[in-house]
Length: 290
Image (tube, rainbow, N blue to C red; front, side, top):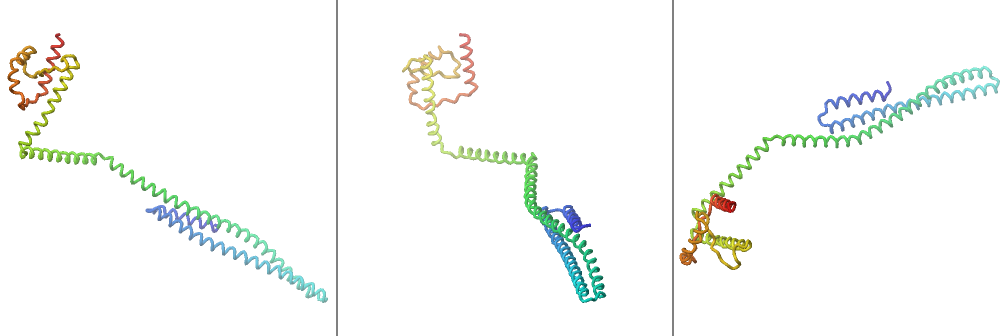
């Protein structure tokens, strides 16, 4: 198993363990990033050791190549001096170092290629960790948004319970009932303890509305052509139970009484709605017979 395969297995194992125990995703993501950086540091040390081995092999190779050249020069020197025996020994040593150099050449080439691959893998691992750090912020933002949405849904689901609204409505009705009782109590107290003289004057002031009604009635009759402009006609009383002729005779006979009663603040009792409707029904039935 290669170095990075081992580290990848360890990182996956740690991440799966953290996810299975995750309670706070933000803390877990930060912990995962820290674990990745720790694994990256270990990978850097392993790659540095591989580079050191590659350089060591290269140094050994260069040493063997140098020894090969040196023994070759020694053999040439022995031949010049006429020492063939020394030349043969030098050539033997030169061949031994050349053989070792050939072996080291292959080993060093393989180690150099593997070291370059490790360097590339280390850069990729570092890039992935940096990308994970950037994604961590995005994931944390998504997680917070999801938590906010969850809280909102929980709140809305709680509000959907009708018991809370019913309790609110009951409380509102209770408050309104207390307000009505308070106003009624104040009205009763004012009626019992109020000044009667002031009440009489208030009634006299409110009586001016009858004059407005009489004026409106006269204007309506004039508009309908039932009353000549400028003439005055005493309004008919409702609830007397007599016809139009009887009302006219009564008005003529009681003229003196009306003159005598002029100026007095006589207040007519209010007409009930039932009586008013009955009078209008009589008028409609009379108009239909006509």
